[in-house]
Length: 336
Ligand code: COA
View 1 (tube, helix red, strand yellow):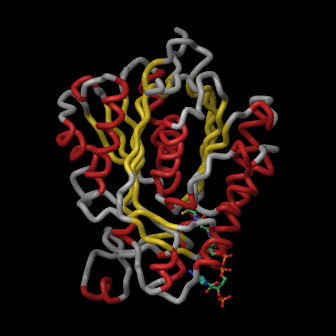
View 2 (tube, rainbow, N blue to C red; view 1 turned 90 degrees about the vertical axis):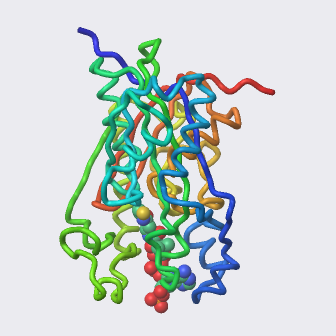
């Protein structure tokens, strides 16, 4: 039996209105706009103060369903990639299912930090390819402000809140859709990027709170070194495996953690910076949301066009990392 391909047939995103600028952070911690911009590429980030992660997801998904003309009841499976679920249990996917009225769907959360969306897309694609399902919602969403210590300058300048979503369906033409992927993880990286308390290792106590163990910890230098190498390697690998050159790729869609990591990846792939989706300046690192947010923004702007080959690449806590090659199948939105 010939395998079906999975294709992205709709995209949506939500970014909260409230903005936290570098100038505002200067008043909160010992930092400055110039340092943040030159070391990370970030100018501002958005903060969601209207509820939990699922509320951002609902807004992103409603947007998507509207565009596609698909009802929530038609969804078979919901995968939410997040490290900031509404609660430890139930899964945010179940909360979302109820809120959007996806009565016929099942769902689960997936934790792969900044690679979460890529991992979730890979898992979702298998359900389409195998013929088990025909409509899978893959979501990347994080309310990073809920696990960020706004007295720690090493991390608080980096993160923002957002949600992005895509719909996977069987591709109509077999040359379109998700063509290939390279996925990795290396648990030895866990020491450098983690959130130590709240799980079974360190259940919450007054002491874990006093020691600020419920916030993200990052050894920035160590993570930076691994991220540069892994994101460039895995992007190079998918290009070589598919005999592609930089000129064959319309867009590199990188996880938005640091401008310098993105530049190094593009350079290694031989891709000009004009072909790199980049919105880190506006949103910072929104963890699992960065890649679907880019896809949705670029598609809405009419810059992501049917037939284009794109490469997705991410690196995150775990360590986890990966790349994916897609031939874009969704036609540009109609001009009003
Ligand atoms: N403002 C001003 N100075 C700051 C600062 C801030 N917000 N944060 C850190 N510094 C200081 C450090 O304390 C250090 O000072 P010291 O030399 O006196 O100790 C100095 O700036 C340089 O720090 P360093 O860690 O070398 O900076 P860097 O060039 O590595 O940039 C990061 C820091 C966090 C931006 C960078 O390491 C990074 O992006 N890491 C990877 C992030 C990532 O990819 N995550 C992946 C998944 S989320």
